[in-house]
Length: 165
Image 1 (spheres, rainbow, N blue to C red):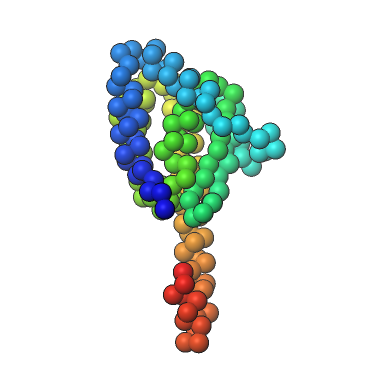
Image 2: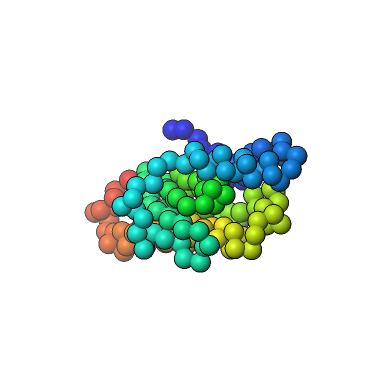
């Protein structure tokens, strides 16, 4: 099984990448370039349920669980926000949902984003992170409920079921 990098290690790598640039203009250009590399977001996912409300730009986020890992995909009509989405995808996509819930994001302060993004962009970034953490939290809760539900129906004859989990 391929071992995935931890959220903290990825945040450190992103911080080191941003340290290569001397000016914030160069950092913004890098963000925009990252946004151009986002995977295609299907139009049928651009629904009201997937829309992030409160962002200055239009942003759609789709999350799920695949192979016990949190998955997310997103798109925006803004170049800089698309770059922020690319960072979020790199940090949170295909990660253990419990790790997402338990790990506070540090990349914003490591890079200095909060001081260099407009108030509305900062708000949008925080809303996207909130969505990721909420959805990962719901997945963790559902996994726990499913396991508890299974345990509630456990009998000595069916103990093997619990051991196979």
